Image 1 (cartoon, each protein chain N blue to C red):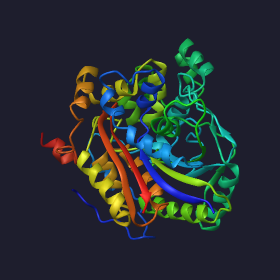
Image 2 (cartoon, rainbow over the protein chains, first blue to last red):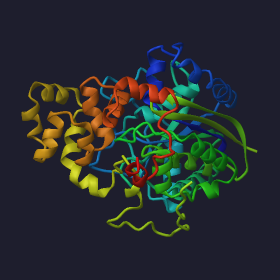
Image 3 (cartoon, rainbow over the protein chains, first blue to last red):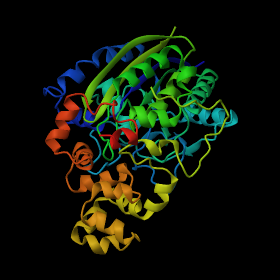
Image 4 (cartoon, rainbow over the protein chains, first blue to last red):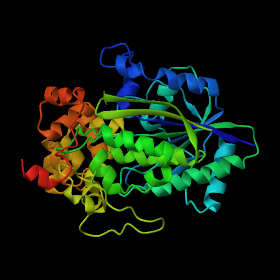
Length: 279
Length: 145
């Protein structure tokens, strides 16, 4: 049977992708951030997953306001990096896993999660930056990827509680897949950041660290954080943090925190990197 | 921390005219009220994902905007690059960024533009740890300044 071997939480700041793509990692601004990613890279190289389910949000490239799926699952054999206005990121094409993705689709919908199913879409920095953070700059990504896109742009996003329960359903689906795949689930986005209006630049490291502590040790409590608290405490774009709860839900109730690092600033964001393993 | 009781599982977070987040200062939550108002504006901004559309817009901004049914205020905000006003008129940040990128601005440039700070001062604020949460939770705190 397939198994979930661990979870990764990772911000998806576009400037991090640009720093990697343009070889700026040695610049003074970026050195302190990239100094912190090594242990997470070592962990995932050691775990060597066959598949990563990457929970992320699209930023108005694959989806617009014409159609706004709350949860959209990518079923395709491949997903191309999106052109975000200055050409696609020079990163490998993302290879999907249609068999497992279709199993997830059927299992999750029958488990009463009403997913949108997507056969064709490009993937933007929300998905590709975490891959770059964890895997660097390979010729091809070392594993298959199943994109799970969450609406966090049009208010209201799904509640943290719903995200957590979806993660639990993903776990049941992976556990029932007749294959030997080793799966890592990524929750991406966050931590605190606000990109818009007069309060832009908001950072709240205390809230973020409390969120991470709770995510590890008491995720049921963290899943009860209402949207208004994310918006106020973590900034209007910090509400992306609900996506980390999907990842947490897919893990055991008790987990081991393998690695945690955060950094201010990466562009406008308190950047978070978290690695969890089932005990 | 300013905690609001969380809903129990299955309990609805009821939509209403007055929203619990309306008290957050300097923040436009992109809810249905804003999305309805901003749909033509955001449709225009979304179209800038396409390189040919960006060229057409640059060639004749006014004529290009005629395709999308913006209201006069939205039209003026776009032509004058009034970034904060675009949000007030229903624009979404990720969509206004497409116009900013078309103009050669970075995300941080755009964020800074909306705060009234110089790009240098905004960038320095971020390097110094960002805008603190203390004093920035509620409108009353801003009004008392």
